[in-house]
Each structure stands twice: as structure tokens, then as C-alpha cells.
Image 1: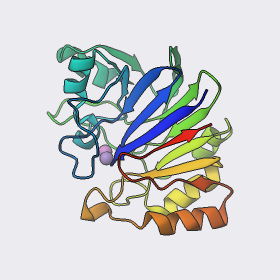
Image 2: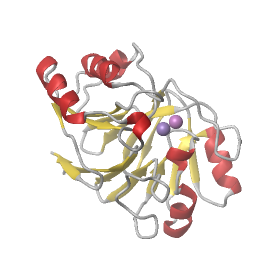
Image 3: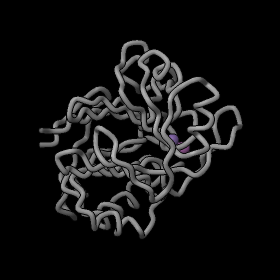
Image 4: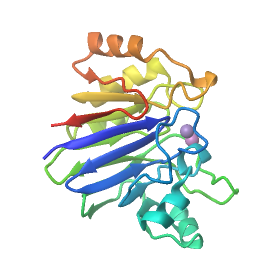
Length: 228
Ligand code: NI
Ligand code: MN
């Protein structure tokens, strides 16, 4: 069994594992960097890290068309209920065994108001343990925090980290995050969508590979790699 990981641009991710298609923060139609369209993307589950528009994106339309279940915090799941879509609420530090694996919501230092001003609760990251035991940590929108070390203690196969700066960690703090997490593989996200978060991901990758044992995968929007 392997996990097929796709970066659709910005913070939109796809995970294909054990026959399940999982989308994370599917911001596609208004995303200048996206390489996917909400009209034909498939999903069984949609993970929403927080309420901001560049993460909620096309969630409602995709969930209505595919019947996918949204997984997020309680406040965002209540909001999904008002839109007529299925949702499974969890909260920070809480894990649940879903058909695709065991998913835990992790701390994230950020905001979470929904685009219409509704309360989006607390922002989160995700730690997924797949059915064959792979650990994938998606930090989502966050600043650096020391408790990443606790997340790293679980033994991370893949860490997905923002490097764009301004709204989230920048390259220097993302390098410190890799040192705390000690993952085997890293994918940088949340950069180059707009000029404000432009970064040189190749330069960051070589610095990470020089200073840590992690292997960095710099993907183009729409590109995948397989975590074996
Ligand atoms: Ni955000
Ligand atoms: Mn964001």
C-alpha cells in the first residue's frame, strides 16, 4: 500500500490512500496557482483546517456534487450543516478512526473566521495515520510552535509545511519546524500563490537537506508523489 500525495497549488492537497480520496483545503476556482477544477475533482472526504476563504474554497460545491463528508472543528462542521453537507466534527487533540485512517486534529497558531463572518472556531492542523501506519502531518496555516516536537515524537513520514511567510511560517521558521518534527519527507506549501507569499522553494529545499535528514519534494501545482 502506498499513499499518493498531490499538491493542487496553495494549500490544497489530495491524498489517495487505501481506495479513499481525501481533499484538504480545496481552494481551486479562485486560486491563481491551482491546477485542478472543482467541477471534476473527486472526493470521499474533505478536511478543512480553518475557516479562511483560501482554505474553505470550493468545499461546499465539491461536497454537494460528490457527497463527500467534511471533517473539521465543531464550529465549521455546524456551518457545513447549514449548507446541507455532511460533516464530522472533531477538535484539537482529538483523534478518530475513519475508514481511511486515524485522523487527529493538531494545534495551529492562526485565525479561523469563515468568509461570511461566521465563527470558524480554532484553526487546526492534521496528523493522519494511514491504515498501513504511515504518519502524515499537515501543519496547515500556522506559525512555528515548540510543541511540534511532540508531534514529531510520533515518527513522521511526511510533513507538509507552509513556507510563504506573512500569513504563516516563512522559510526560516519552516526550517526550524523540520528540525523539531524530524520527518522523513517534506513538502512546502502556501507560497507563490500571490506576490506577497513568493518564496524560492528550491533554495529552501537545499538548505533543509543540508541541515536535516529530511528529503524535500518541491512539487508543481498538480504534481504528485508516492509515499511508499
Ligand atoms: Ni488562513
Ligand atoms: Mn491560508
